[in-house]
Length: 193
Image 1 (cartoon, rainbow, N blue to C red):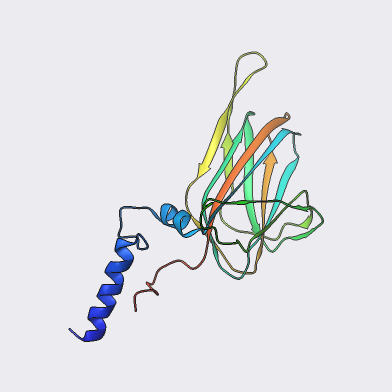
Image 2 (tube, helix red, strand yellow):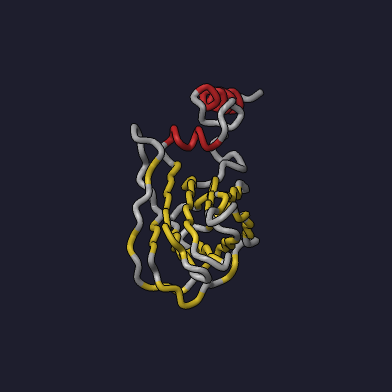
């Protein structure tokens, strides 16, 4: 074994002991939070009209972004969520998001805009999510939710549109939550040199 390999193994074991490698008992999200590179945003629309959309623009910075979890909750009977790449949009307000590490946060490079006007949705990225709820008794609806837990890797310096459409036939409340990591995926193991 060459001296270089011994140093590389030492570096790898140091990273393992510091919780910076996936071989530890922590999942990636836990490590990302500790490194200050895991972020979150949430929204609440009290009454989304039937046929209306909630359009959210997500602009990545110089680093790729990995969407770790997306939750959409609603109290009606039907909702569709789609994601598009390279939409044409204007206006809207920058929406604040939060770093999950308040001790050692790393500034995020993402810009999120809500209330935008979308004129061209762009190219659909991934399969749509069709969520079906159920009506309750009388005037009530049973709260339902959707979890899409498969990671999506977004290109750097790219604009995406998340469009949530109310196709239930009536107005409904819609809430959403998104958490992501900013940075390169660790495969291949670039830090193992």
